[in-house]
Length: 448
Image (cartoon, rainbow, N blue to C red; front, side, top):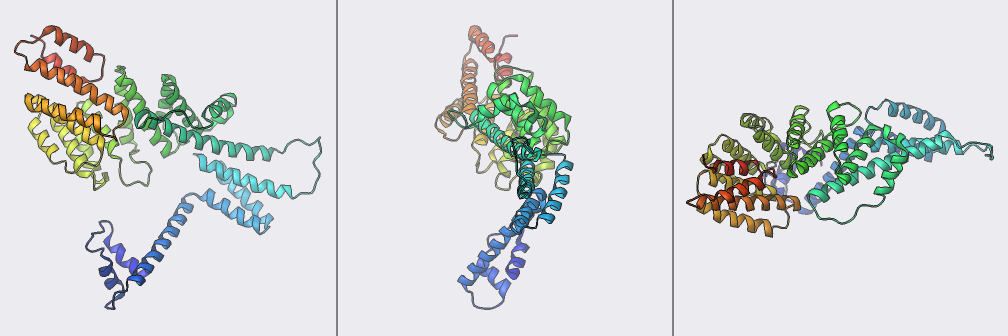
């Protein structure tokens, strides 16, 4: 296994397909002996199993509280109660020192309280009706509850966000209203900052009320150490999505919030799902590009793509970069150059990028006054929107709205005499949307 691993690690990080050929690896690892496929497969299998064990150990090293509760279980099985109580006290001190207490922290706290109470239960003293319930039993229960509340609300906010932006799903998960009602009645649970974040996120996504948005925005910008990286990443994503919904509804001030969240994520380097993640999600990159263009700062977008280009997944880098560069050139009014960048997109794996590139191409065609190919491309785009099965419902609505207004704009351009009534009606309808480019183009058609 060690000989095989020594050869494999030389191929990191590209893992070139030709050099990864198993016969070539066999020869380099084991010398000029006859190739044995079953031996090679067995060695590779053993190496894979060892790698899994290694990853489990790496996880336990990062999650020391969980690791030590596993030790408590082993000490309990061996009835080493004195050593177990000492370990419990040491572990409890570590828990108290933790700045961020997430769901896993409370699961560890529950387990240590469970084993502490297990030792106490061995005491043969009789309990009578005069005795009060042990405080430690209540701590055990509360720790388990907090673990359950954080884990459940974390799932609820994910589900509700997906429901709004990605899928059509009826109903809600089990217990959602029961948990919210319980926390409202027993608000002392909300003294935990992580639980408070997910509680407010769920209420924001259910009610669509601005008060929860502003409460969460305040918690994010305070940037305290009592909520972790993952909570801040989720906050940025969901607050930006909420602001986008409000912006689409015509609340212009929410555009600034969308941009501010993305600027905050760059400044604080909260760009990937976890601190260990090498790559940034391509939709997050699209949002940052969009924000920079909205701010009329193509130079800043260019700098971002340059600085963070190595954090785009290799198989997505070509179309992500092409779209970003095209947006920059479009903002600089280099429309032909923007079109050249889009032509270099290569195979596009993400359906939202496919739609965004088609929409940007339509805008370029209009700026170049290529109205006939623009009309043909608009029809093709409309067909794509109608037939694609992967586009989120909200994005379909947004693209359909763009196509509708774009086609009306084309017809007005095609007319020798501008119909002032139709133009006024178009501008009036556009003013209630977030389609800023279309509004500007319609305004340009107004007679001087």
